Length: 367
Image (cartoon, rainbow, N blue to C red; front, side, top):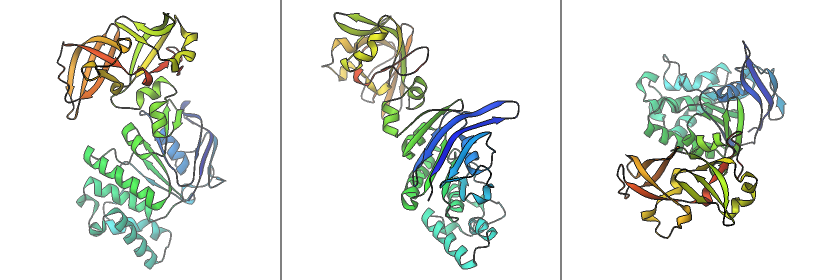
């Protein structure tokens, strides 16, 4: 297949709008890379520049060692799957799948072989004679993917292809795309604003914000070692908690303190936090790393605070508990066996081995 290398790529639109600011990304052959970030962060613009649908202001894009900045989109040997399917409504499924091959004057027998092979892979063989309006959303998306598969391109590009599907179909199609990547062993670059999609699909994930890459990592490293507050808050559902406070030294140990909060800091963070003693910091911790002490009886008081439940949000297999502690708000994710009720005081245990600390000004990780 192909390696895709993006070097110092910048995109400035008319009027001076900076959409992408000097990004660097190296996508290995056969790798599945996901670009994720909020709307307007530049991820779709990057995809369109790779595809040749958007001119590059500065920098280079290369595919398989060839710089393609000036190569027309039709000659880049890539295939792009769009959010809106982009199927021809007057053609049946077979004709939609065959259209691109016929434009390139493939022999009729080869067109037929490729169309039927793609239909078999995607499970739409029974739909070949049907028009797009006669298909479900999931079937339309499969056909859109199939139209890319038949061309056997060097690179597959996906621009939020599942955003029009309902929740159940999105889960199903995520599985289908994973199977497809394993089967085809193709280079795939996928854009989404859904961080769950990103975590489940990507070999590596590129987190973007404001036209800049914030972090590139595999899903586990991204989740467990965010480089800044934005990444920590964007990846994970519900989002991470960020508590304002300061570091103090007490009885030879460091503590994170604020109104109603006094938590001992583990030695693994000590060296990084000594320079921040008596200074404000942000403590980041995920909702699943704070526990109701009822289910953690052996926990030390040094890692425990008391807070009153503001809201109980049942989610089926789990429950989200919301708290206010002084100026800080806190979300805790517990199992559905927890019997906490609104206005009840709970003792909450923090797993401080999972805590992250951020500079409140730069928002960069400090420990």
